[in-house]
Length: 440
Ligand SMILES: *[C@@H]1O[C@H](CO)[C@@H](O)[C@H](O)[C@H]1NC(C)=O
Image 1 (tube, helix red, strand yellow):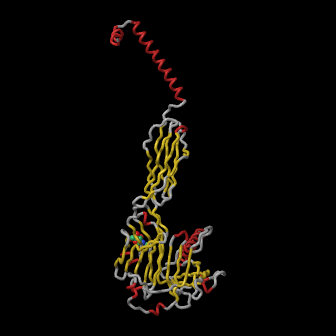
Image 2 (image 1 turned 180 degrees about the vertical axis):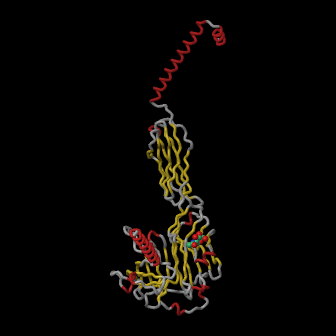
Image 3 (image 1 turned 30 degrees about the vertical axis):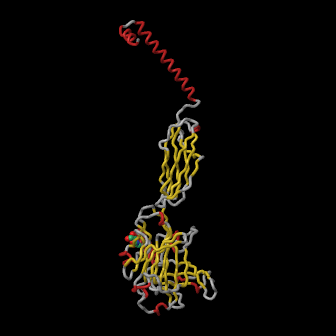
């Protein structure tokens, strides 16, 4: 009985400990190692980069002594105590790397210069005056990239002058740092923001802007003026936002209703508040594997030694990264690669997808009686195969024996018929006579 109660107590203790450990670890944000990057006024172009540490808490009054230990390689002046009420910077992918992983989260914090925007859909945010005293503070912007690109966050923080205790005012984050999508499908590029409701900047409206960039060229995709609740500009058909979610939950995700090849590139989600703006960039790649067809199909019958010219055409794929090859599977069931194929240059179709083909000069002399011919296309979107069967009909050296055997069989049959008809005619039946007469 005592044994039982001891076990029971032990169990209870374990469960309690676990609950405490679990809840405390979820409420505490990991400290984030960061680079403090500063431009120095006066020394033109001089930028310094120093190791720093961000301690993040959701409540300004909760200082956790254990989490405030400062590593010896970090200058105590470069340690920030950030208050982040919505825990936007709290994510385990931003913490120290797990054992054995080589990757680290990336973080950069730097002084931020606030200024009114002149963009048409942002300018209305700063026409009405508000206390500019609020802007008199140290402002910082931080950019964080989680382990394995799980998420990307950018934040703007305000720190009462010279305190190094900034408060998060505006955070923008995305969980789709790098997206691959099939052609013609809808795709969602995630972007969400949070504004500190206690900030005087929060009530004055916001604007959201999505821009597209590819190889140095940029253009506007969509601009939304949250103050007047209207789309200020859109230059991409089928691009839209979830306007309800935008106002209710800060969901600024971009929806592309039908992906096209030209949609591959970088998308920048920018959220504007009066005097502040912050952005995250996400990558979209349209990946579509090829369709294959073999010509001629079906293949004509071949005689040994004949060279067949076979084409395999790959079309409708993107990006332009394709390896075409041929394989042959004979009667033994083993596949082997075939050489002597040439690949043509690529062409681009009206929809931006690519096409490419390969031509094989197939020497049929070593292929026995035939088998299966396969065209293989290796593409980032997947490997595709197309097959056709090849028949080689025997007229070569072994067929001399075949025809001799056939002559032999014919002779034997002829002899048999002769024997049979001689037997019948010598027995002298009427039927046999009549048949003979008819033949004559
Ligand atoms: C944002 O809105 C889109 C479209 O309605 C939705 O699919 C997505 O789940 C939303 N994201 C969040 C975090 O609520």
